[in-house]
Image (tube, rainbow, N blue to C red; front, side, top):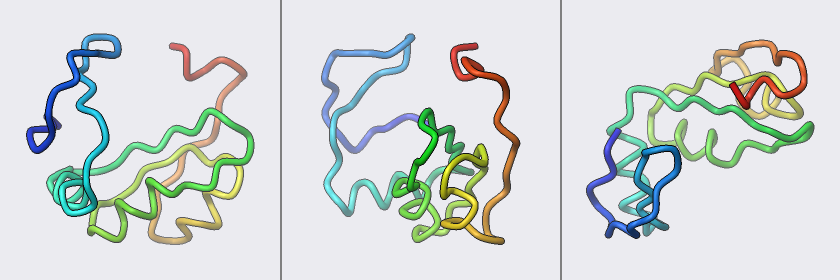
Length: 90
């Protein structure tokens, strides 16, 4: 998903442009354009605000089942089991 509604910061992360923060209406529009949100928390106790925002915009969420993510998303989410330490680095 290319973010077109924000200014480009010129920075990137592994080849993906970082556009900076989006205002609420622009963020909702980008969530709404997405086919799905892949939520991959890196901490043991993530809350999942980005997943909640995506669901509020009608975007399905696939998540790694860590911390409170299962409770936050409930039956609306789809979950994968976390792997061994460092799995997100691959």
